[in-house]
Length: 516
Image (cartoon, rainbow, N blue to C red; front, side, top):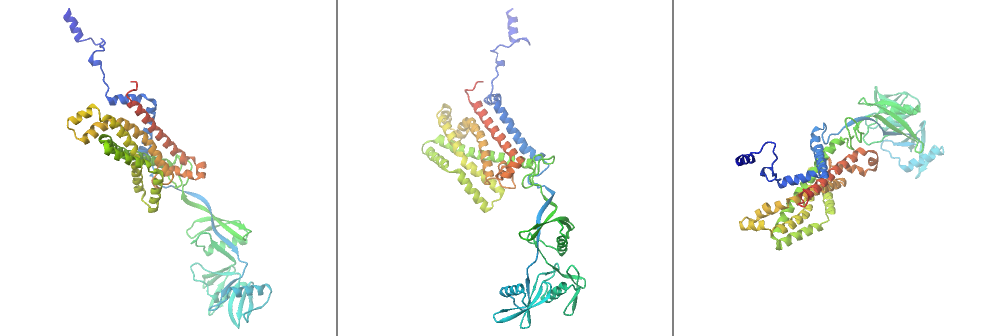
């Protein structure tokens, strides 16, 4: 009977419950599993982890899915009005010196006075000048039988791509034009003159006469004779607009606007122009519209997230590496080594980081540093200025750990000093290090965004969430184009909150006093 009981105890039935003392029911969690269990039991930690995963997927996977490149610029056709030319009807006398003669401004004023007084002569420095009327608003001024200059209101312009009109041709043309003639001679050559003032040499246009002065609104703009004829016809007919097709075959509408104060016509060109798609509203092709450079906003956000997150991680890695190195050495050796390193830490704490970064940013702007190299410098600067806090944390933890029994054991076993520090002491402060680095990630991303917003960080054509928000410097953009800056601000908010939630969760998970 006792043997049967023993056999039943040795081999319990399938449905029989195990005893609490049965070693097969004891489930021991590793430290990592215990931390993970505590972490995932915290709702905010899980939410923060989800937020960070979403930002990583959006930034790194989204860039591959997006059909557009980071710096791809989009263009569109749009009707644009711009100042093209200005036109003024000439109502004052202009002067042309005869060949090898001079008719200065004093003589011009004397002529104008004589003309107003309807005199045929005027005197200057004991010389008498004679005024001869050649036609309507056309006069020749002579002295001692030598013709000095012409005074005229109708202007002789050289035809397109032709050298300036010589004096003899200009004089003969104006005389024929004011007297209604259709031909005139200059030497042995005969020129034809039509009713519109066009001058031909054997059917080849050489010049044209007009009382209108047409000036281009932009330097280097070529105003053709054909355009001027169209414009003069519109002005003579008091038209408000006219159409003209230029040499390249592009047709545009030109609107005439008269300015009474200056007695000038402003001619506005209205035509379809191929321009950047700046600040385009959200659409099917561009869900978040386009920015000031005509680039797709959602694509810029994806690539900007890559830059912001990568910069955050690299800066924290640099700071953690330097902090572990100097903090570990300082905490383990103590004495003068500890004093020296801690004084260096104090010096770094005294450095005004913001003015320093502003100065370095201005210097890089002046030297026109390549944007890629600039990003590298930014990461190095931020990392080099961030390590003192981590160094103090590591040093404080190691000061309390180095006197414990396991460190005495390592010394007794003859383990080398670097191995004691980096294989026995540092792993014991990794939990606190992970917590502070996680929380520093959020603040580093904010710092980078602030610097890029101020124009001191990531530069165009690279995108970051900070330099995307830089468009808020323009109050018109801030109030009218919400899709430019609000999405980038939301991405920053989600990322920083996510890292802070994860940091809080890790801090609680690593705390041994937490309830299991």
